[in-house]
Length: 453
Image (cartoon, rainbow, N blue to C red; front, side, top):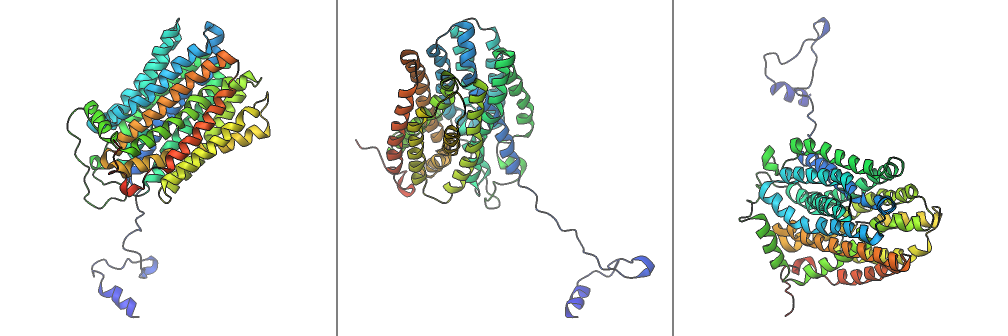
């Protein structure tokens, strides 16, 4: 009864009690239960994910074009690999400048322009007659475009829009790269095989242009642009003001500062090996290597896409772990396990997808880019507001390693007729990366540790 009188005393008299059927008084709730709205950060992350998925799919396309271009133009695998190598190098070298440009001009403008570059580079390949045109289109234009939507973009979105779940979101956006590979590779392999490589190139161009309106209309640069704060940030928190000076000058200034610390070189060296053992080697040469052993290209492309399926799981899990486990330990484990798998790979190739190869695909897929969330976490802890730009430079080293591995593996195949030394070399490099990772100082002292001498 006390509860009833408390309610009665606190209700207004006029119109307080609705009258139901037959004049009976009914008691109803004052207000409908309000469900909490989904934070805007998640919709921004979703749009970023779409762009990253596209960038990964566009960048993976040359892997399915190597054999068709070799057959039509008579270019050697080393020549075609040069275009892939330029693509990989620019994909990485663009990242720190793109991160700085996003600070200066906003993510929406930079990503929209990048998509237009990708569409131009892919579409113009249908007119090429010489190998230098392949280098210009797929190497330069597509490399610059996809590099502007690389993992530095993922780090920027996570830093600006998330305080809570930052590691998890970094993992989700990183997994978008695997998703793009999963979506595009089998489709492009089918198009290249049944309808010609030009159809595959035009499909990439159309897909890139289709994403532009979505990015322009829905992507936002800062939470303050829509009257909110980052997810998990205290009420009233405001973004840091844009850094003064030009974007290019800032990117170089951040590099000069970070290069004076030992952790930067350990992170960059390890990530260079990461690129060599993934994008440069597996992503570029797995399909032609499997074809050398009699496997049909669509089957090999399907296996590489399957790597992307398990990479989604591995990368999201890695993001979750990066919020809870020492990132140095995670990196050491990832590189060591990857090295073991690459040493075993040469014995697994055959004309069909044997169970042993499927086991490799699952194991390797879980580890594919699981290295990204802990690397981003270490850059953020070490370099604060400059963490995204520093990660851009670390990612540039990733692509330098990838570019060197892409052309080196192609030349190895031309000289020896097989890829075996390339697989073994990458496995040994991964062991070195594991040692480098565990030698990074603990997060608390990263920023203050200078390079000796």
